[in-house]
Length: 58
Image (cartoon, rainbow, N blue to C red; front, side, top):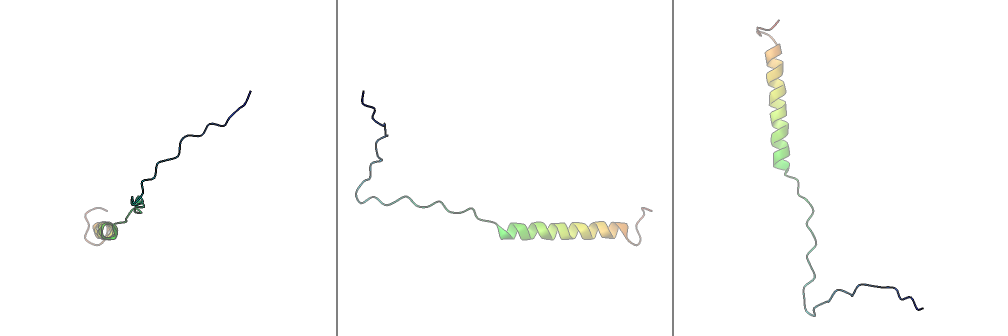
């Protein structure tokens, strides 16, 4: 008995066809990060002000 390794057929290549474009890396929205950091900074200032001088909470 002769055993032959099975291989799937090769992908057909069309002559003159452009190669597929490489996938673009994910982009990071730096403006969104800056807005988030600004919101965090403001929130911390609000918390500090609420705990500081003149607050009702003792």
